[in-house]
Image (cartoon, rainbow, N blue to C red):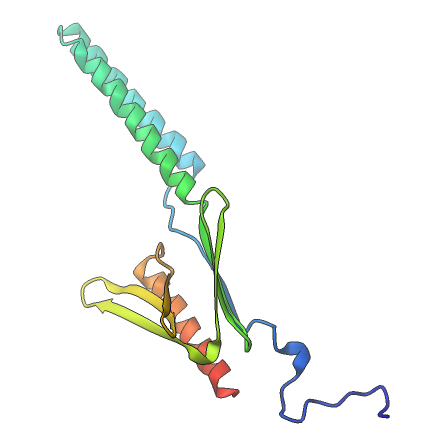
Length: 173
């Protein structure tokens, strides 16, 4: 029986490190407006709507005030929906054993895909004007879009990282 020192695997692969990710990323949708920005935008819009409503009210066009109120309510609902969508994200990880993608929606529901890295390829749809439009992981007959809520430049960075990691993993076998 051998002593306590275990040498490296004969194939050169260390079984203890096979499940460690070579690449991992968390992809979040772009949100240009934070909580403070939301308060400022809503405050300024409400102030403009109020001043304009008073002017129209004094001129005798009182229904305009109600429509401005509805506009402010619609703006509030739209911004809150945007904040809710901002809570969603994607987690991508590539290890020598698997490619995993998890998509978490705003309610916290998690959906996962797992692929064999040797059979996985990265497909790109590019546009001259807009850049990288779609990034897709494809394995056999199954495919899933990656970084769908990211901007084209962020999608390009994710594509570079994914392609390098897939090439590295495939080179090891």
